[in-house]
Length: 620
Image 1 (cartoon, rainbow, N blue to C red):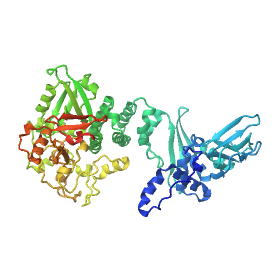
Image 2: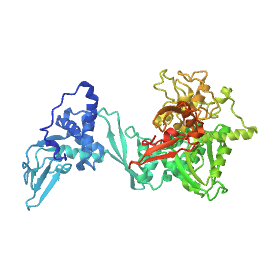
Image 3: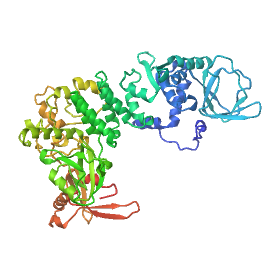
Image 4: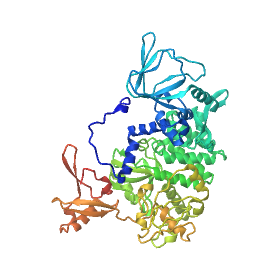
């Protein structure tokens, strides 16, 4: 139904149904919340109350409805709130009823909520006003009179009316509530005084407009209790009034040098990385800004903040596909790699040739290479990785920003350079390995990450901050750590790879349990801590299932992990189907159906992994 018809829908002829049982109450609530007619009924209930009896909830309901109407569009929130508190509801049931006569004294300002009216002027002109239009007095106490005759055009016309005295008082009070910030004689920012509840406890000034420069500066100023989300709002909307994010980035780097602003600048960057990491990933200038900001944190020995930033970058980074073509196999690679499974790490990009095709495609320092041409690179030796990259002229590379682990790798290589020999972890050497993943982090774990007591049922496992970190997180109100970093089973299932994007190598045996009652006073804290935040060392346990079919449509379920290759699935399938043939006689194929009904079959390469992630909805 259109808005004008909504009031008089003909429900005759609809079949009657049984009354819903109490079990359906939840569904009914959901339907009611999503039904626009139902929400109009709630608004009508609020309007029919005497203005004195309206609660804060009633006013919120009215605000939600009224702000969509053109008559209220250019008003501030506080003005709308005040008008909603005093408005009176009026209904004219019949079409053709005269609402106002020509020359009649006006005593209110009114808005049409449903239906439409027609004004006939003395000279014969007509004008139609419909839902959301307003008529009546101006915000003045002077006497005003109606010009023309106003009649309803349809049945059930609904209006809200605000008495002239209230309308005049509220609109004139706006100027008193405004606070204008001036610089060199020009207004650069306007704030409005607001009270968020009737108790008077939550009141203050909220920024409603300003110049781009002044709004940017407000990021590191004190925000009032009624404007707690200014930073988040700015980071979401700056792209509509600034040409480049680096305009904000340059200012933040400049303000970081002021010790009094340092913590506030860091909070802004943490929120930015957490809420809009795509602003950094696709923009080389913003990537350089992030590196420079990290260097500043290192220089000022703000280790806790730096680790938070690195964890946030790792958690928020998305996989990216980069396609490169080399003129020949002999052509040199336009980037330098570090890491490899022999060092207990994945493959990382150390540098990219400036101006190369790789730079243009978005490859950058700190990227971890996850896959090349369908081959898994998360647990591969550096020499093998280089061989694959050199031997292919067409490279389809899946990467992910992983500065957190890249910094660890650089630290490890630096240590090896100093010590003169690579330090490889030993399987039995758990205590050494407990500090192996994140050097320096375990040393001041008390200041950086405190582990709150964990519910034994593992329902609410979180990593909570202590001391300075807790204050930072309380201020930022962001969650950048994995939601369930550990649980009561083995470490194999404890860490979600997607959080940091690095496949784990196999230095630690799967038999190690993780305590279900970790606390900051646990004498084994550093060992347990290693298993929670060590993104390098977790065994590769099967955590996915494939259903594999034979040509005769028999099928078997086979447990696999992300690293299981197509060849390994074939070997398992032969065993499950009790076939006598050698693995070479069989191959794994994907059969799919196109929207047009064409059946396609393709053989999967023997070394293809991540099979469960690749299968299409229309495929077997």
